[in-house]
Amino acid sequence: MTTETKAFLAIDDVEVVYSRAILALRGVTLAVGRGEFVALLGANGAGKTTTLRAVSNLLGVAGGAITRGAIRYDGVATAALPPVQLVRRGLAQVLEGRHCFLQLTIEENLVTGALACGLGRAAIRQNVERVYHYFPRLAQIRRLRAGYASGGEQQMAAIGRALMARPRFLLLDEPSMGLAPLLVEEIFAIIHRLNRDEGLSVLVAEQNAVTALRHVHAAYIIENGTVALGGTASELARRDDVKEFYFGMTQNGGRYLDWTSPRRSWLSAAGMP
Image (cartoon, rainbow, N blue to C red; front, side):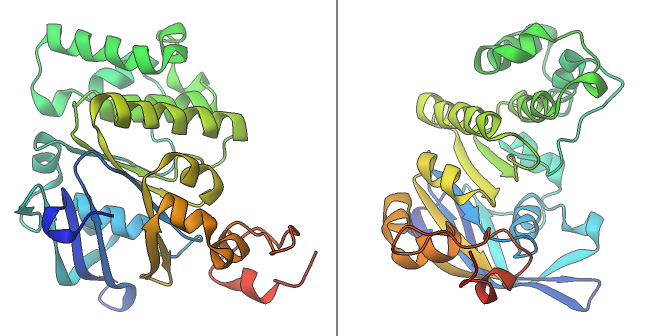
C-alpha cells in the first residue's frame, strides 16, 4: 500500500462531526497512490460516505465539518478549496444514489459534467465519445430521458458525467447499490479498465466486498467511524477474519448473515444459518 508521504490522496487523523454534536469519523487515516484503485469497505453507517464527502468538501451541505486532522490531494491541503476548485484540479465524485437530471437525455446529462471545466464544443464531443467507448450502452440510449433509464443505466450515466471533467482522481460512493450482480460486475470491470488503461486513481466506498476485492489494488475496512484494517486486496481476501466477518463465510465454507447489516449487528448473528 502507498505510504502517506507518496500519496496522491492522503487523509491524516481526520475527525468529522455533524451538527456540532454527532461524531461520525474518529482519527481516519488512509492513503491512495497515483494510479491506484482502492476500496473503502464497511457496513451501512460505518463512515464511508462521510469520508468521501470530507475529501470532496461536501460535508457542509449535510451539516458536517472536519474538526481535526488534514486531507491533502496532489500535495495540496484541501480545507480551503471549494468543490468546484477540486473538480478543476482533477478530483471528481460520483454521489451515492445515481443522481441524474431525470428530464434531460442521457447525453445531456453527460454534457453537464463538462460545464464546470469551461470546455469548448470540440472537447466536449471528444469526451462524450470517450464515455461511450467505455459505456457503449449509453451510446445506444443517448437520446432517452434519464428518468426512463434503468438503475444500471443511470449509474453508468452518473459515472460518465464525472468522467466528462477528465478527472485524475475519481471518488465513487456505493456504485453497486440496488443493482443486479451482473451489472455490478460490469461497472467494476469498466472502472478497472479506466484505472489500468488511463491511470485513473480511484477510491470507491462499497459494501460489496467480494466484488470490490476482485478489482482493487488495496482496501481499508472502516467500522464505527474509524479504520479497523487495511492491506492489499490479496492480503485481505486471504485473511480468515475478513472472510468470516466481511464475506460472511466460516472457515469450513458455511455462510453467516450478510455483513452489510446495520452497524455491527451481524456479529451477534454469527452462529445463525
